[in-house]
Image 1 (cartoon, each protein chain N blue to C red):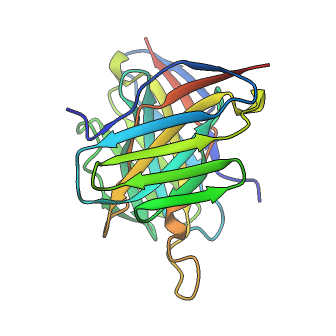
Image 2: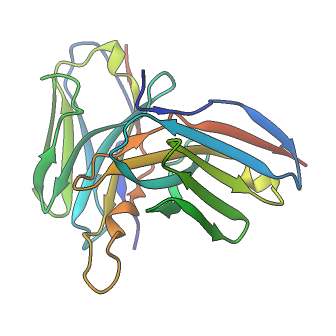
Length: 111
Length: 121
């Protein structure tokens, strides 16, 4: 079993929809959680990070962490065609920078 | 800043040949990470350095892989001998060390290079 599980998609939604992307993990030592966006044939870029349970909002993006369920989510409001990309979750334990990434969810926002 | 620079962008080689991938991190960054990305396994951390010192190389798949960071502005990932299953996109990323008084989690903001697409025939 992988330490981090992520549905690969693809997930297709109409423009303006609310998108929900999720990851589950098995290692209770993970305390730091990140979401990266990766456009085709590009390197990943950091979108959001959270360091505790709860919500964090940044513009149209909201990151949510539920440590009790070992479940993290990224919500995208008013999705745009420019949001079409692969979204990767990443996490690490305290005291190390050994990041574990999900395999990514491919998102397509249709105009 | 030009961002993280990787070379070559594409590499096609034959099985058994030595491959060297190169990375120039963002100036002033303290951490450097090497990743490999495939469709099947996703993005995997191979090794990371702090101030040019290897900290964790547990992700290096086998002895055929080696990485060095001779100075703060240059790192290499070498595969010798290469095999077809090494075909992947290899990314280098860099980040800052935590800063007291601000940016305590700056290391988590990694800046990725454009990647090197390696094909081993």
